[in-house]
Image (cartoon, rainbow, N blue to C red):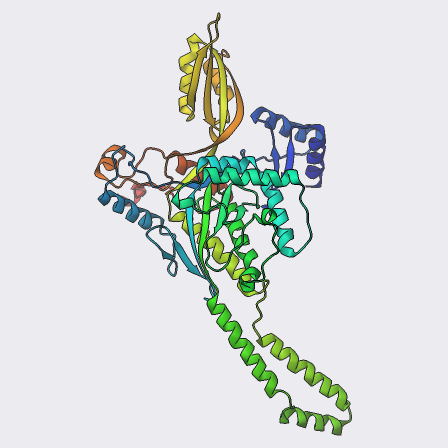
Length: 504
């Protein structure tokens, strides 16, 4: 292992296009510019820098998770009627069955959940963000990081000043968000933004729609001092934000980061916790009042110690006072933002976000390459065949003037790109050469949890829907890599096997 670490450091110094990092799981990961570059880096590590045998995993392909609006047509392009809507909702509840008892689910997807000690209750709803907003958040991640850093300093009471240029950029960013978030559903949404995630700079939003407690990320523009109202809610503010950050960092489908999801906290009730606090304060005050005179037991203890002449009276009195004060300190339930309730709030907020997401149609988001291929007319058909086999989509095809060379522009999922260049060269005898460049993230339209529900779908896809679901294939591959549970049968319709010799 020390040789590997040393070799990776040397590789990082020698090659400006490679990144070396250690994941949270403890795996050493190489980030390279492409498939050929990756193979070159591994060979260099083995032969030149580390000079040891290395076992490398298959390339790790990043995915994202998101939610969409409920579809208007089914898988055979039939319009979804009322009866079918109920069938789809019932089927999704039956199939997934991931939301346990004790969690209330509204027909509109509002999740209401309480902490294990029942002191706090949260209501969370998940909504898909418009594509323009997601792109805007991705583009301005550095600016969002600056806003979040300033907000955390501001809440801690530290003095910070921002230059006018940054403030103007933040104001412009806020105005763009307001332009894209239009309609009654997004009314005052920009002013209610509580945080961004994951890692406080991602393409997901947390909205604060709680009554009686207001906190937003735009305090750098307002310039007001942190309010002293609702101090109990302010103490546990970070627990809600931490739960949101954890939920957006690993989604419910295959523990990949979320993208383009807006979570709104519509209710945050701490009334039972406040009642418990007041009861405990009363008990502690009564206890202190009763404790002004020492009990008979302690008086007897003092008398026995005097007889034994082992301890002085002053020492015993000091010990008694210290013990009694400690006893009442421990009994009083203090509103501590690092106490047991804060941990329960983090876990509850994370679970609420996951369940709110599962209540809506979930989709995988795949990374896409733009693929530019130069080829001649005679092998054009073979190029199209290779692209369609790997889920590619042709966007444009044009002929270069004065030549017989065609230029094809297409998009191709990164997950399908391994071995693509070799295959296209083999199939076209070297007449076509592809150029792959990362382009964007694209939602895979297939539902990974889909099963046929209507008669038409049964006729078209069969009872078990044997035709391969691309999104489910990607999701299961990621789950297997991460060691998560995968719902699949290894053996189907197996016949009973026996030796013929026994049955003679």
